[in-house]
Image 1 (tube, rainbow, N blue to C red):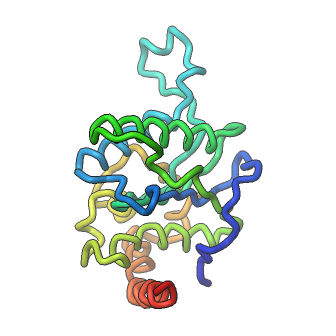
Image 2: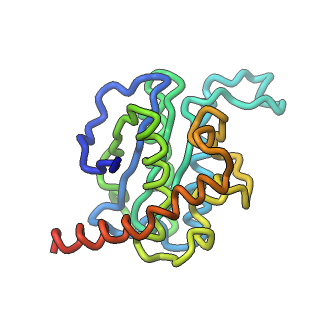
Length: 216
C-alpha cells in the first residue's frame, strides 16, 4: 500500500484519540533550520508545548509532576526547509493549539536570531488523518525515510533530527511516545521495523525522482 501524501490537507475539526500526519514547510520553500542549534531549539519547542502549562496547578509547578499532554508525538523528522510529525490528539483542539504555539514560538526565535521579520512557515500547518493500522506504519516509514530519499544522508542512522534512532533502539528520546500498541507493536523487534523502513528506500527514492521530473 502506498501512502498518498497528496490527500486533502485541510484541518477540519481534529478528533481526540485520532492520529494525524502533520507537516509544514518554510515560506517560499526557504530553509527554516540553518544550524544545529535551530534543530535543537525546534525539538525543545515541541517538548515544551506538548503539555498544557495552563492546566498545571501552582503546587505542581514546584514538583516533578508532568503537565497533562494535549498531544502525543509518535514520530518526527526535521528537514532543512520543512518538518513532518505524527501526532495523536489527546484534548479538544490539542493539535491546533500545539502547532500554533510551536510555529509562532519558533518563528519569533528564528526572526530574532536572524534579524528578519514576517512569517517563517507557509501558512497554517497541514494535516492528514491516519485511518488504519496499515496507514500508521506506512506513514511512520515515509516520515523516517525523508533524509535518505532527499539525499541528505546515505545512512538514516547518520541523521540526527529524526525519531528513527529511537525506533531502532540506538538512542532514547523522551519526546516520542513509544507504546506497545503504536507502530512498534506491529513488529516483532526493532530490527524488524528497521528492515521494514530500509527495504522501501530504493523505491521511495525512485518515486522522489519521478516527482521532480513531473514538476520540472
